[in-house]
Image (cartoon, rainbow, N blue to C red; front, side, top):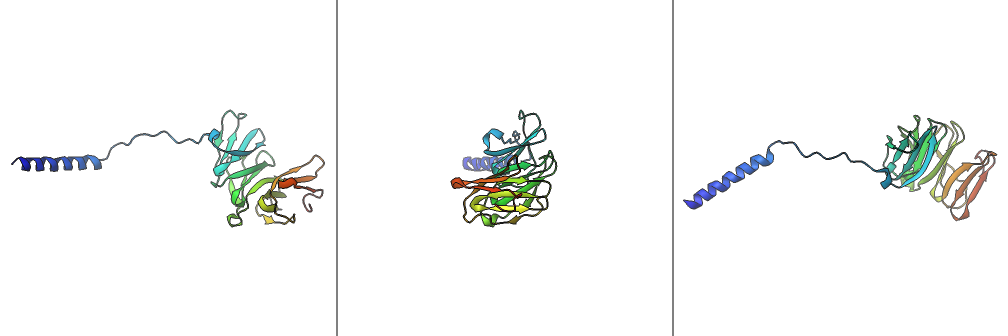
Length: 197
């Protein structure tokens, strides 16, 4: 009789436990996950009018409208690391990164769209620069050089060196001369707007 009562008690316990386990109830509340800008590797920054824009690992794009006191995550299309950013004016900008990724914004960095990517090339891009609303260049690993003549809508690779040294940065001097700085002392110069180097 005792073992029968113990069996019934155990069965009752199992039923109550099962009902409790599967009963709907309010789950615990967790705070929203926040990516702290201080925990990311940020690789480049630029001004878009009075706005600050910075880019970095995991496709991070952050904007600040108060001189850097507070930062807001932008709407970027990729989780691929970004290494360089350039703004032509307060609205139009481009960012480049791994997978030969190029993204573009037309609203000061709030929203971005992918315009080029070539992950199979395994050549990250490091910097981007535009002369005007149509003519732009991107440079990167293993001598990567891309040219756009349509405002960054399409990009064509061009070979401008005989070796495969990384091309790290592109800039224009006050006299209009373009320079590309790269690894192992590489320094390229163009006096014709990037047609020849």
